Image (cartoon, rainbow, N blue to C red; front, side):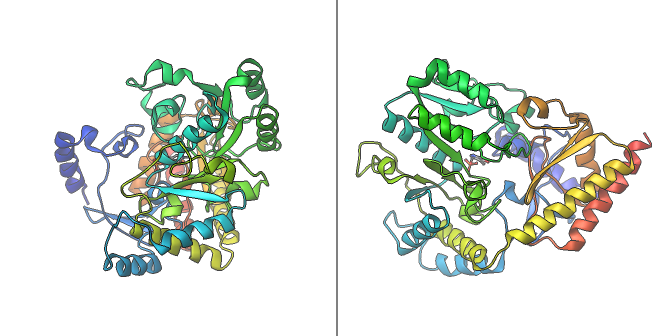
Length: 430
Ligand SMILES: *Cc1c(COP(=O)(O)O)cnc(C)c1O
């Protein structure tokens, strides 16, 4: 079977869409070749326009915890769309979603809905600056918080694989307000506070990193961030756009027992439609217009269809414990991959937190962006294409997370491990 239709569509796309894509990592620059165009998805599978079927571990980069076209979500959205797609006025569903999120994440007493994670992080930082009346923000090398100007500094996968340490078009003055620390390294945070403490508005962090590949926080790292931000009267912002409802119903903050001052949500929150949010302490959220002076708004914010998809997803997730199953499936995949690495004597390490997982080739451990960058990218590209040829669709870049969904079956995981075994046999024969 050829991939002629994808190839033809890509060529047409290249003429009218920059790089042929509406988000850079979709162009497969990190792995080479040309991207496959997707026709549809069903549960754990996607189908490309050439009729190929793949087991999907991208899951639209995180949102699809129930897999593609989840019947309950589809039914709810179908019903919702008949009542109109947007009003630019308040709906009951927004209130219900806000109430549910506040119940699941006790650190959030109020939240505002937006349309993308980028907007959520950008708005949370504006709010943190206004609240503290300070300018600087500390972020971590390799963490991604969307593409707002001041946050595009050392920002992880999409940029790491494109080789752009920064982005042109970001005024140097903006980037200067962002200080870079090292993930899992409290000393690096301490040093920044010692120098700039009186002017640091907030520390923003992915509590479990997903954008330099999966990296778990070391014991004491997150609590250390909380201590130091409190000591300097700065705010702690958890960017849980990936981890919210992924590593647990209450996000990483409940799993690790740290209540941040502000939280960013997205991805799963929208159940596969464009929805995100930021929220947290009431005294901070009170500064937002119309209560306070900090402006933030959106024509499609809290879009009824996105809210229905998100609310349905969260209700399904909270009906019974699904995280035990996600943990088991993640573990199955991790152990299967590790056995294959050992069997063929391939050097590599697997980082996993629940249902998010990254396989780094050529390194023994990865606990920071610097260590992630040591991995063997060429081997990853061969791995990606080897798996693709065997019907497994992985993130097309080495510094990304694979996501297991509740739609994956045991047989899907076994097929994935077998495909890896088959590829590894070929790879190690040279
Ligand atoms: C995806 C992501 C974002 C950006 O969300 P968009 O909806 O793509 O703008 C922000 N932070 C983290 C941690 C993310 O993974």
